[in-house]
Length: 415
Image 1: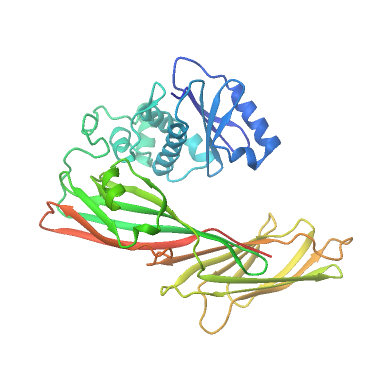
Image 2 (image 1 turned 120 degrees about the horizontal axis):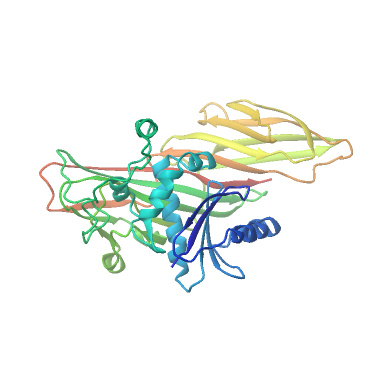
């Protein structure tokens, strides 16, 4: 049972406090938490469960905002962590993103959502599609009406039809002229390449996202051609676990609209689509930089939105960098950003130039880490393939579609 939820900014300010039970949790717990964040750094913020002298704390960090929940009673830790993840996902979906200004501009919506998502410390309604029927998402019209009428509430007067249903994530008997269901594979590649060009780590985090507009109460089954490669799978509550456990088939009654059906991880991949070859040589107070970027393994689809960023060391006084393709910018926080776009067929993109060191330094002793970004439409680099999607009692006209997208996650090249 959770007793309180706090939302903290990246500076430690308490932006929002929601007491969940009759036992009030004092805000001093946030001071204790932030003091340890400052003193211990990232190692403390990476701990999802923390034991303070008076409470157990659960924390989830999203877009610089810390979601902090407190309890004094024994409870499953994963329940607290999962609930905070659901809160962050719902707020991001409702508000179109997460940052300090968005939260402060929509305090009423946030409090109303928390009122519906948890009751007396126990999670209640966490499905975004059902919450949308209960609480209208913010828009310009609703904000104008609240100013004119003085009524700032967005809560509907009637409960959703699914409230008393055995399938609480789905609206009651929706009807559509066109029955459609679309499945997207969205993957992020995390990789670490050392200074010798060897692949230290390469894995993919992926999500199966579904957009369903089906009449009645559809029963879907989704199967993969190679499910054995999947690790660390995590399912939406609509998925029946027994068919997956026995035959590795996803059987489910989908929510209405867009939702994340499952997430997964695929580890120990052998290659990356791009190579980055940095070369830094320094002497006499200067450092010469040369970086090459090219295609290592052609995925069969166009690789676009390629970017490369690196933080200039503090000892750099000035930088003169140019490229033969794309644009190079030195940002105010000493980050060099190289926007490549697509790899041209007639030349290899290269970045070259000179960095000026501080007067007392002859050589560069701190070398930057290069962060790579890219996007590939139409292919899942993990190799995961959807075999088929079946619908029991399919309507006469059913439209199905499949897409795939791979983009860079934490893709780092060390120099």
